Length: 148
Image (tube, rainbow, N blue to C red):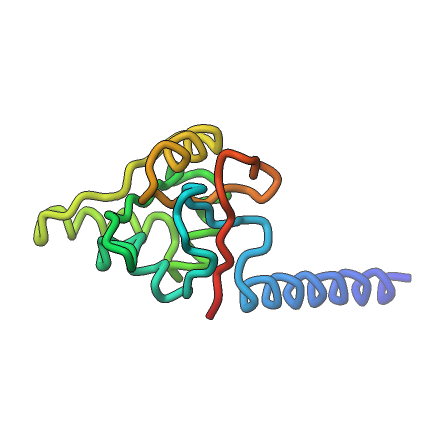
């Protein structure tokens, strides 16, 4: 009996690792990137999205200023976005912004406390982009597909 329990625990552990690895390697599944409804963008490359959120690229293709909106550092959706897209933990992103503010004079994206505020900011600015849990999407914003 004891061996069966150990095997069961090992199998469950392996399955959890496989699930997490597959989920991470494919990108996030519960988080969607949103833009203003009037933004003509339908898809965005992951590498471009990183540049937008790290403010290395500051304009959309048509010249509109990119306005990234971030969630608070402890939000699980921010963690999923940061790790899945930016390939950094939220704390590593915070460290990046501290360094940028000291050396490059750049400021971090606006940080808001919940999905409703992300949607409100994105809906109010044609250049804004953010991310939310996919269950929070409504008609006030548009989801863009993230492609490799």
